[in-house]
Length: 324
Image (cartoon, rainbow, N blue to C red; front, side, top):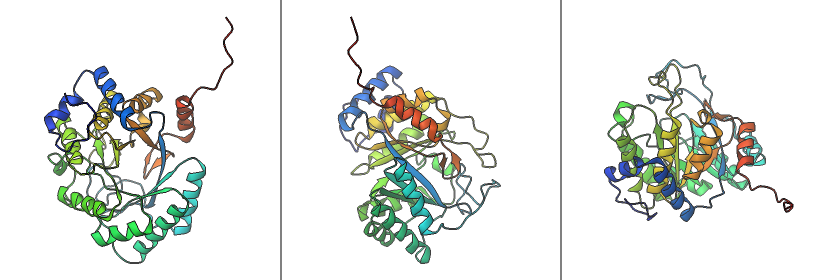
């Protein structure tokens, strides 16, 4: 079984399923070896996520409470003022975040005053010395180039799932639409942040298919968020049960093996995991979390809970020698 940590672009779905489905302790060991080969084993990045424009999205993503197609009480708000966004970025930096992600509920970016304001936000976050990330929907090549010039570090545009299952979740945007935006991001020289969601009713083969698509990019995506569905009443997936935590661990571990050099982000759904399950995800390859009590519109682990988590992960204090 291919678990050497080699960076490959030719993974097959069957190979990835084989990695995913092996005995758990074998999978944990293999993923940890690959993780240590490519990543500092004791470093977990804190990233902050802010919804800078909320609700009213014309897309029909079955998991999303911001879709205008569903009756979900998330409210709608226009694009936030630049000064307010940068004040929140400054606060996030003071709390220990070194990546600031800005999300807007749009189908696609449109040129004009709002895009110009976004460019100012990116410049401001970059000036704070933070990694600047945005997720704004579909991009043209020209827009991607302008975001790069403004100092954008990374662009998030998730595939959500494998191409075979995708039409069961979204009808208003094709898989090729998503891939076209990712190609524009890559061509502009912006880091690619791209992952997906598990727990939507997809099979392990669908999860493996998504990872095979991501592995086909050369280079691999620099950042891969793995989300567990947060079921929101009022959306088509609102009555789905949370996935078992071991499924989350298996997906994180498989992602680490297939995409060895990527930063693997333990993203939505983390608030449903115990501290121990989160640590196990980090053992098998997760090395970034969103720090803050909200992920766009869904709950996240609280900051006190995360402070306790990071305290548990920290090196123990130096002690005096134990007496015989």
